[in-house]
Structures are given as C-alpha cells and as structure tokens.
Length: 207
Image (cartoon, rainbow, N blue to C red; front, top):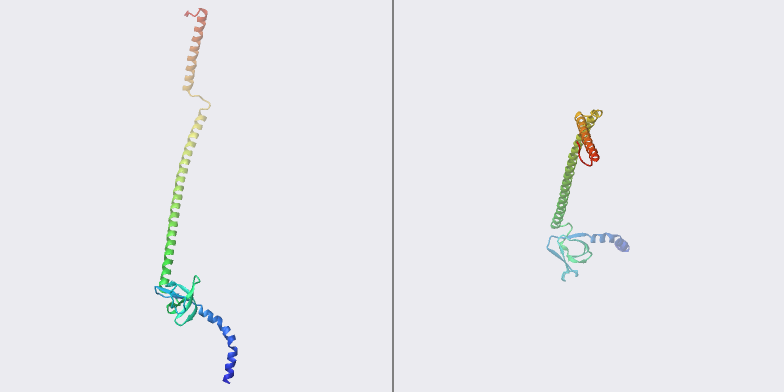
C-alpha cells in the first residue's frame, strides 16, 4: 500500500514541481539590501574565495537570484551579477541609507523652500514697483487734471471778458487812437506843405 502511494507521488512529482517552480523562482529573486558595513565585496566565485571585483556600499539595493550556504548570487541595479556573503544582506533598508535618503530629501525641500522664498521676494518687489508706478501715475494724472481745470478757468475768464467788451472799446484805447491819428495827420500835412513850397520856389523854404 505504501509503495503504491509513493509510486503515485513520484508519477505526479514533475507536474507538481512545475507548478511550484514560479513560486521558488519568485522567492529566490527577492530584494535585499547591503547591511551597515563599510563595503561588501562582490565575487565571481560562489564561495567568495577569489578577489572581489567590485565593492558594494552599505544600503545598496540588490536582487537575490540564488542562495547557497552562507552565500548568495545577486544582481545589482545596473545589471552586474556576482556572489556575496549572505550574512550581510538584510530585508529592510539599513538605517544609514534611510538617514542619507532623508537628508537628501531634506536638502531638496530646503532648496525648494529657498527658491519659493526667492520667488516670493521677487514677486513682492515687482508688486511694490507696480504699486509705486501706479502711485506716480495717479499723482501725474491728478496734476494734469488740476492743470486742465486751471486752464479751463482761465479760458472761461477770457471768454467772459471778451463777451463783456465785444460791443465797446476801452476809452484809453480810443483816446490813444485819436491822438495818434491827429499827430499823423499834422505830420503828413506839414510834410505835404513843405514839399509843395520847395517845388514852387526851387527848393527854398518861403514860410
């Protein structure tokens, strides 16, 4: 009876193993991290007995492809494969790497904050310049309006004065015009009389 069960198990074992293979491969290719040590050597030899051809820093993310006693074959993020001591691989990212990432993130945030503050300061300066420009334009406009109002008042005064004196002439102007006319007439008469006498008497004055 026991031999029949064993034979049945062995007959179905290949199919069972094919069903289990993806799970085994998926388990083998797990993501691990180099623990908090200075450097971890990456070797060609499965027992790491040869010289390391590359050193992995603490916190380096690797993919475990295969495991052996105390050793693991891994693949780096850039696709390079080799063997390392599995003792130095851990499932969680080490504290040093997390701290480094947090510090880098903090520096990035500080830089973004500085840029945002610089942008805010620039915007504040620009807004101040705009406000100052608006104030200057407003003052200029007020001055122009005041000057326009003054010119309108002067024009109105001139118009009213013109309307008041349209049908009349000021007596000083009339008196001046009469005096000018009399003086001009006297001088013209004297010149004409003198010219006539001179022609009559050969250029001599006879008066």
